[in-house]
Length: 141
Image (cartoon, rainbow, N blue to C red; front, side, top):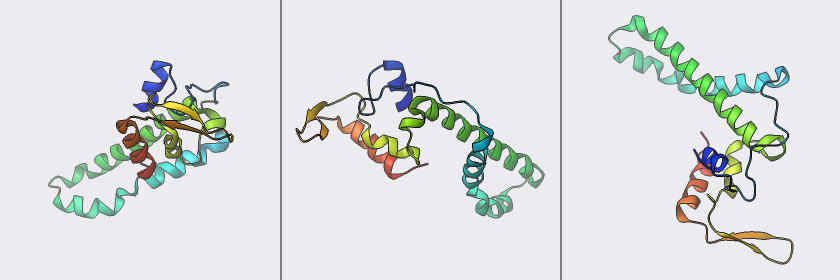
């Protein structure tokens, strides 16, 4: 939602970056398909809970459908997030772990201060923007 807000508003919410990336990142590349598969497989790490869930389930015949639907949902969610983030930040802005892009999130609040030594900081960032930046950065999901 923070990416959508920045995209729609047309104002920078991540330092001075407004997005979407120019030139656009290709939507699909066979050479990096293994990355999507790795993340999707890792994100289905809920499997350690399946025996406990299966034991409590009355209709065990539906467990295969539930597990398959869960895996498909996770795969599609990771794919959609990947498309949105790669389109918004692009190859030149995206961090190796995309949650690190939120370190500079300010939600369009605050003012830029030139420190004079080449360093630029932002003061007066709203507490809600700091909370979002801190949460997304600290708890990548």
